[in-house]
Length: 244
Image (cartoon, rainbow, N blue to C red; front, side):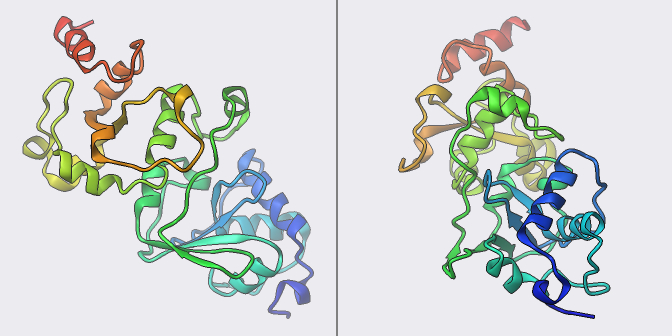
């Protein structure tokens, strides 16, 4: 039995078909690599490598190495024109087949580009897509305006460091998340809110400062997105106080 994609006959088209099978829900995810994530070069999104390859195997009928590890086919991916991301900590993540949490890309990682370059902690989600395109992306990405905003504001940002710097107290309702839930849980449940309107956000090249953000609980984060201005903290506080 062959070891490489060439020997097995797996092509880039087979891998893309595997991604599409997972994206549409036509194929169920099998197995998790926990560390290696494929970058779909058509739209720049991440997919857990092992489920993609299992789906590609099923669709193409070409058999991969039994009980393969995600590291086995990394060189083959580059040869097929794919870049991929390798997290330094192996764990199940809410990316690709199980949902979308861009904050997880803040975890330490290396990006192995198809052209041979390697970058450390440099993955960014693709440039902002038109909202009508976001609405068309199926399978749990939840690209409504609020979720889309969160994706942008977390791309390439060391969100955990900024949260620690600003403090984990909601600027809307005053919730002290550390006192209530403990530091680790507070870090997970509190959001960074970018105070610049989505329409005015540049595609790239913008520097990040802690002053660009405020820390909000999930409820206040959603409430402020209902206001006309994303930096109307006073309006948010009035909304919370009124209980509307």
